[in-house]
Each structure stands twice: as structure tokens, then as C-alpha cells.
Image 1 (spheres, rainbow, N blue to C red):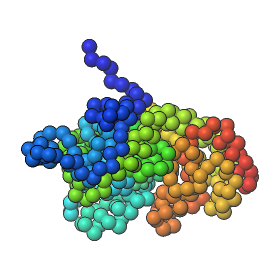
Image 2 (cartoon, protein in one colour):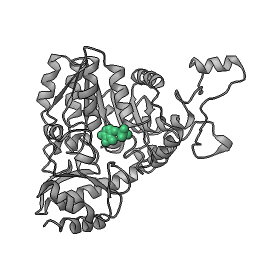
Image 3 (cartoon, rainbow, N blue to C red):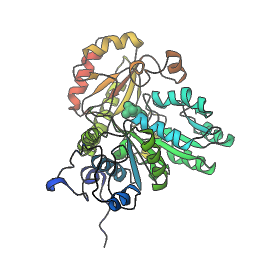
Image 4 (cartoon, rainbow, N blue to C red):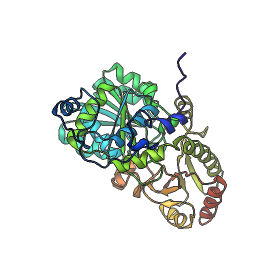
Length: 395
Ligand SMILES: *Cc1c(COP(=O)(O)O)cnc(C)c1O
């Protein structure tokens, strides 16, 4: 009898942690800072260099600490293979530059991460690659675009900062029928709440900087998928050079051990806070996929195991009201990141969409009076009391 597949919380702890030769029998993954790995005889050196035997040659290509990180995210995403990058943006740009060629067409959504949106609008066109961005909530429009040809369907769900949900299974099927590859940025959901490969995607991308690391102290990125696709990405990464550093890989690995615990808490707290915000008179709109009022709540229920820690809301009085609210929050960093143990808040104009102009944000459907709220692991009653105190400035 084979052992049942371990659950996500078990993989978060044990994935990538075993099966390596360890320094002095250390139980923890060591941080191997060495740039190169030495071989006394030419034959073993060659065998490793040509990939005939396992091992490492040079840390831009592979490194033992980085490898452990890649194996943990690979197992959490139930993928055949994974590779890593120096940041989430490095993972995303490597994917675009590995799988797209001049004349190709990419189909995506308007609500992708600000940096990704910049790649679509500013960098891809100069390589002769057309990026068509569809209304995120209009799945039929996305499907209709495939008829004009599509090499890559690029999705993100839930989205940043309006927390829209995209039907990955439906759009993925239609894209495959048109012969396209399907890539999904799973940063917001994390593999605890959603596994895009099991919904039919070919590639899953992560900004490990956010929930995977969870402590806002290390930058990193990851891509997971079939061995064939990951080999191509890995080859580009080796030459492009955006390698994850061993120290950051270690910080990310350490953070990932508590991923399931953190996400379970953040799922619960975010839903409680979203419901509380909905009942406040000074709050105009609350965006959270766990709310029954969310336009794609049914899709979220189908493809997610939890609705995540990210929500956003708009208050009466727009940006001026936000100016009054922000300084009154006690348990929140007012900063540009998300997904860490502390609560983090900020408007899109200085966070997710800082790279965009006000016009570009408006075109993407992001109101200037929106506040993005990344729920931390603090006690939810303290977070609500804090919000109540802050919102009293405008109510
Ligand atoms: C932060 C983020 C990125 C970019 O990741 P970096 O690690 O900052 O480069 C990409 N996608 C999403 C959804 C993000 O939140």
C-alpha cells in the first residue's frame, strides 16, 4: 500500500527538506554561500556539468539552498518541476521572454500586477509582441480574443488590488483549444488556497516575496510546471542571471514552514474584517471573494479552498479620507508590500500600481480612493478595533 499524498500543511513543513546530503547531519537546510563547487577529477566534474549526475557547478545555475526552496514550492503546487528567481518580476519577465517571440500575441486581463502591466505595455511591444488586455470580469471577451490567435494566456487570480476572481479552468480550456500556453500568477491565493496546475494551467508563477516568505524580509520568485517547460525557463534564467540568492532562499524556506498556519488565520480574519467593513456607513465598497456579494463568489468557491488575506475597500471622501485614516492605524504598516505576518495597508497609487499614471489606473478600473488591506496574523478583534478607531476620523 502506498502512503497517501501528504496534505499542504505537511508539505509546507517537510517539502524540500529531506533527501539532501547535509552538512554535519544538520536537520535544517544549510545556507550554502559558495558561488562554485569544486571537483578534483575531470570525469565527475564533467558528469555534473553535463547533467548526467546530480550536483552543482556554479550558483547562478543551481545552489543547494536554492534547490530546497524550489522543491518545497514544487511540491506545494503539485508540480513536476520548479525553478526560482531573484524576484517575482524576474519570474514573470523570464516567462514572457522565454515563451514569446516577435509576432506572437499574448492575451491577459486589465487587472494584472502593476509591474506585469508595465511589461505588457512598455516592453513587449518593442519586441514585436502584442499584449491584449481584456476586462477581467468578462470571461466571454477573453475567450473571443483567442480567435485572433494567442500564444500565451496570462492570468492572475485573485487580482491586485481589486481582488477580482478569474475562472482559471474555463479560460484555460478555451486557451488550450486555441493552442496557447496558460500561465497563472498565484501570489495572492498561495498554494494553500489554490493550485492553478490542478485547474489546467501550464505554469504557476509566484512572487515569493509576499505570502510564501511571509515576513517581508526576502525577495524571491518561482515558476512551477512540467519538466519540459521548467527546463526552458531554467535555461533562460541561467543566462539572464536573475538567480535567487542562497540567503533569501533560506529566509523563504523558513517562512514557508508556517505557510498553511498563516494562510488559515488570514483567510478567517480577512472574511471577518470584510463582513465588518460592509456594515460601516463610511465604507462605499468592499472587495473580497469570500463575500456572497462578490461578482465571482461562485467561481471562487469552486477553484479556491480559502479566499485569502487580501481585501480592498473604498471609503467616502476618496484620497482625502484615506489621508486621515492611515496615520490613525496602530497595527498596520503603511507600506508597498503584502502577504506578511503584520497587517499592511496602502492605496494602489503608492503600492501595486505605483508604476502607473493616474490615467492608467483609471483605465484599469482602480479608484484613487481605494485602500488595499493585507490582513496579518494579529488577533482579529484588535484589527477591527484599530479599523474602527481609524475610520472614526471620517464618520
Ligand atoms: C509583488 C507581486 C509581484 C512582483 O513580485 P516581486 O517579488 O516584488 O518582484 C507579482 N505579482 C503579484 C501578484 C505581486 O503581488
